[in-house]
Length: 127
Image (cartoon, rainbow, N blue to C red; front, side, top):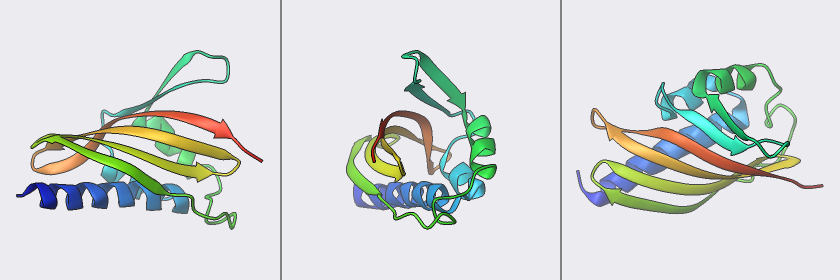
């Protein structure tokens, strides 16, 4: 597989994640994230918050999706850094208004397939 092929595969993983987020489709999101992955951020109280993937997916299943709410998409892949044959970083922006997110995703190629191993993100509230 060439670097170009890897970037295309990574873009596919990211698109599954973003589509799943917009549609509220936890199975699409799960396909992009490794089962042991977690989401890390600073909560409203300024504390480190680590949420296991499956806890987050439960939250996705139990809320109205941005698509159901008629919200516009705000997806943008800012950068893809293919570090080597088994590691990459992706920076992207997405939103569930009024929350706008910047994600830093660490991807690993596991058993020949790119998966998100870790998500670190920040949230901005906008009107």
